[in-house]
Length: 432
Image 1 (cartoon, rainbow, N blue to C red):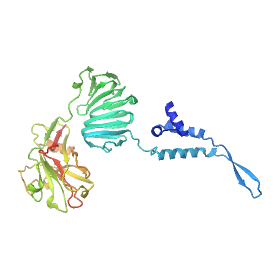
Image 2 (image 1 turned 60 degrees about the vertical axis):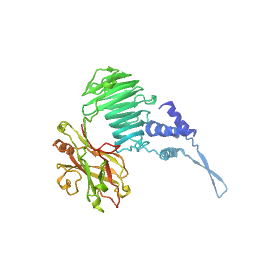
Image 3 (image 1 turned 45 degrees about the horizontal axis):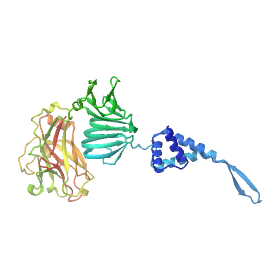
Image 4 (image 1 turned 45 degrees about the vertical axis):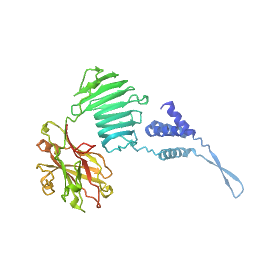
């Protein structure tokens, strides 16, 4: 323990801490077992509970001094005080500590069990940023800027792991020694701003120092390479590339998404009552299921032209849809709404009717995704072996069906951007 940390504990015992110092003590006790032991021992020593006399009036008018020693009770007494201090401060020994905070998001779309709204405090765990930018501040003082698509694992205030994608790390003096791991190495920061890119498909990790100095450690050989301003290095399939200077723009590999195909103009919606002009639109794909008014059920049909690519050459294929606001009451839906993606092989004509459209009974179910009723925006879809095998077999027509029903009438219709939408991209097939 440092002298400053000891002074915090002494100040607490003397009841002379400021509010900010009290917050610092809370964090210290939560994270440092030695500090907790020090406080407990010091409290026991400084609890100078002298023996005192208990006067008991006797019927004979004589006084008898009864010695009573509190020292035998000092340990449990101080222990109870310490537990009370921790509990009233909101900290428990067995609670998972908060190690970071999401500072800001720009057009961010997430896949994560951790909270993702700005201001959210984060414990250890994984964050997957599908699109946009996000700034995350760790308790150590390190600032991480993620550029989607990217995936990061938060390990501690002084260590993270970039699984895929690109990130910028800014480290203040309080966080010197910060460690950023990649699949085949790690970087130790010596007070700097640096960029990291991880391509898990090509098995390449790249590092570039923007300002300052880092040490890049190669996991295979155990060697370390020091990088300073504008220097870059790459680790590809376990091989460390030669050091380059002033060529940072050449370092980063291209996006992991090597091919993208948007849904074509033939993508459309269908409605069970066939009143297309009244209840459908060209700029959105509408999806709804109702057992109360089934005549207003809607489904989306997607068609992609992938003739320019050989799907069998790719390890992953993903369908992405952009959710946009639509009409209806969200409170009249289940809290979680499930959507199924079907593969279809037959074609359709424009302005088709419900009965002439491809049917579920003749389609192949490829997977599902869910959308909370509270969401009006976001990127959703599937990426699995069923979709990959269906597309690799030469098919690229899909149908989107909502499997959950509204709980009351006038429930929200789910809408996904189509090719005419003024702000958001239409459905997308991504080949990795």
